[in-house]
Image (cartoon, rainbow, N blue to C red; front, side):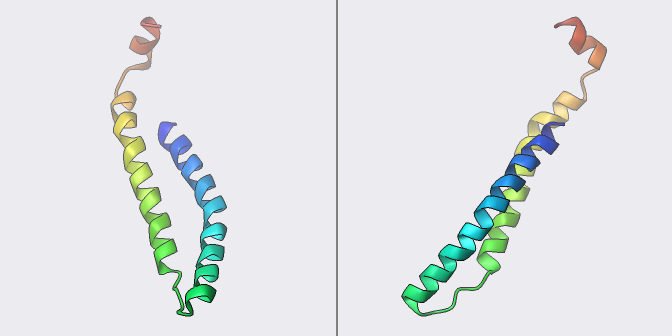
Length: 75
């Protein structure tokens, strides 16, 4: 559940940020005059997904190993 929520937030950020990144790349291309490929944008989105997945997995793994009845007893 933690992993899904974290990846949903990152996916929403990528959906909003990707068009802005491509628009900014086109703006820089017109100012500089040299073409800028889409590979850096794609690689940065992939890196964000991988890093956020690892960051969400670190607390999710120990939490998944706890017995729900024991956790509810301490509530």
